[in-house]
Image (tube, rainbow, N blue to C red; front, side, top):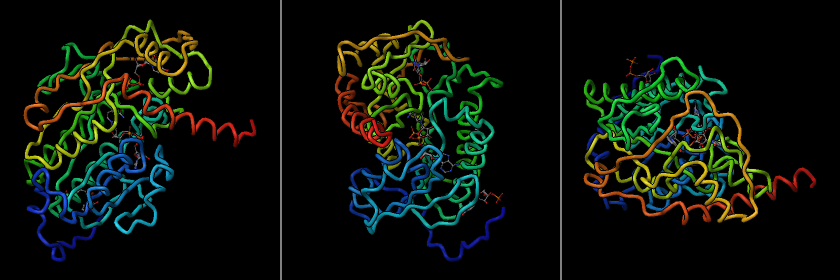
Length: 343
Ligand code: NAD
Ligand code: UDP
Ligand code: UDP
């Protein structure tokens, strides 16, 4: 490796990483890669609230400083502009590894970069975890199940993934990241945790990142038709971001490697989602049909029995309760955008 070894400077931390649930007063030092993004910034807020020291690593590909600006000046918070594809030296207790574009529009924009982020980025963070004895959590995805032939999806399902399609840079990238995590766990004794995250929404999502919830909400606010791809009968299960953050922290601080599905089992067709957005934001909202993208999974719904049983976790916020919570954030940002454009 390119990185100079400095193990002799490091206090063994393998035991420090093992934090019992509920022990929150200890000054843990935690890295969050991708911490300037949607999920990462909410996670960082919670860790800082809990009293931890947090270092964010982000290259700002899809993340924004605005998501963290309220923490600038807090002595427990540090922000490093860095690309995880390059090695880095740090001394921490836990690594939450989120860095990776999550929206299909973003991850297809430069697919080779997406693979490098998933493979080399994850390798570097695992190398870091190994050197300093930190615990490592990977945010994998329900996309590892591909276009699933099993429904709902359990963690034991191996998936139905196209290795050469437009989504493969992400799906196969995350599958390789899971493999790397397990090999560092088995081979080098790194304490790893694997979360398979299902579609998540909430404040701070990129306005125009092309994901279905952000698209429909932004479109309804802008009085544009909501774009339904294909026949709109494909399904997804939508989880509110605070539920996910609770799950990630329970997983990191618990004793189980996983993988664990973290998602809300409430399943909706895209037409049903459009209806809920319409009822929440604007009863006069309309829809328009557009051609669907390649390899779009037909259905997706997590079986979360494993997380319920072993992490004592389940989502609390339904789609109808969660959607209104992201609307004011979206309205404000869309208003600001319009003002900047002089409208
Ligand atoms: P996001 O795009 O808002 O955040 C990703 C962050 O990673 C951004 O801040 C981006 O700038 C940063 N990043 C990307 N490449 C990087 C690199 N090479 N080096 C450093 N930083 C880099 O996405 P999100 O929704 O917050 O997703 C966070 C994680 O959760 C991702 O790993 C994603 O795959 C996973 N996930 C999210 C969802 C979801 O529905 N939001 C579902 C499944 C999995
Ligand atoms: N690495 C890193 N920071 C560290 C330790 C390692 O970024 O503190 C990177 C290192 O540059 C390498 C990767 O992690 O590319 C894997 O490291 P490991 O020690 O497992 O493998 P090796 O360096 O022996 O290939
Ligand atoms: N979709 C849609 N309209 C949009 C954006 C997406 O109907 O404006 C559909 C898309 O075809 C897919 C589903 O919504 O079936 C979820 O897409 P998203 O990009 O949010 O996440 P994915 O689960 O595909 O990663």
